[in-house]
Image (cartoon, rainbow, N blue to C red; front, side):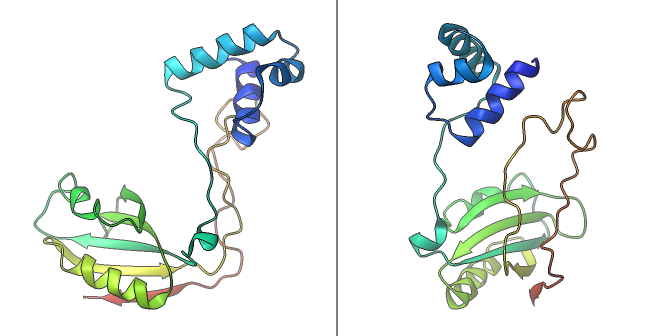
Length: 175
C-alpha cells in the first residue's frame, strides 16, 4: 500500500458513496485507476465491507455500556456463541486480565440493561459481570488508515488519547 491508497481509504472512510470520478480528482488519478485500486484493496481484504452508521439513540438505544465478564469452567472460544442471540451485544472481545470477555452493549435504559445483565448471569460459565455505563462518547472514529503507516503524521504507536475526558465511570458489579 502506498500513500495514494491510504488517502483513498481515508476518503472512502469518510464517505463510501463517493463517485470514482470525484475520488480521481482528489487523488490526481483517472477514474479507472481509482476503480482498480479499490478492487485491489477489496481483494486484499483491506476493505472488508461497505456499511452505514446508524444513530442508536434515534432507534431507541439510548444507553451504552461495557460489560466485563469473568468466566469459569468454559473456554473463551466456546462462550461467544452464548452471547450471539442477544441483539443488544454490539461487540464481543476476548481480553487479557481478570475478565475473559469484554462486551459493548446498547439498551433502551437502565431497566432493560438490568434485565440483560440478569440474562447474561444465567449463561453457563459466567461467574461475574462488571458493567461501566457510558456517560458520553468523546471520540468514535473507527480505524484511521494512516495511523499505522510509518510515513504518516499519526502517532507511531497507534495511541489515540482514549478516555472519556470527564473522569466519571459508573460501575455495577454482580457476583
